[in-house]
Length: 59
Figure 1 (cartoon, one colour):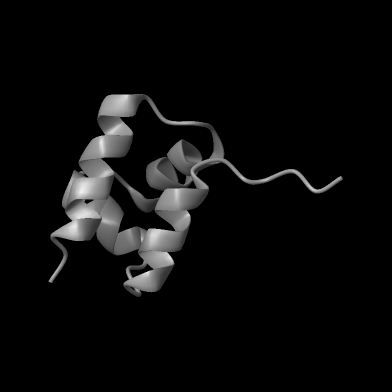
Figure 2: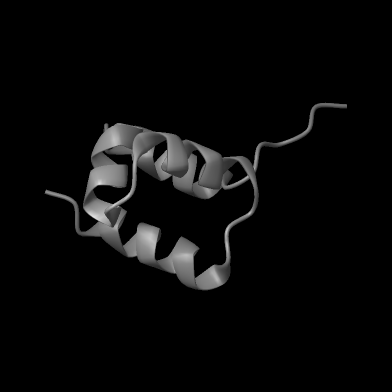
């Protein structure tokens, strides 16, 4: 059985808009390593929503 990675919706949204993790991390004010660690585990709803909004509004 293949286990789905955490935060798959966010991962796909980032990939769909060609947003590298380092750019999203910069926008959030954290290091790339921190953002990568965040993506390993399910995020709190508030953080997930904030990232989703940033992706949606990305230019």
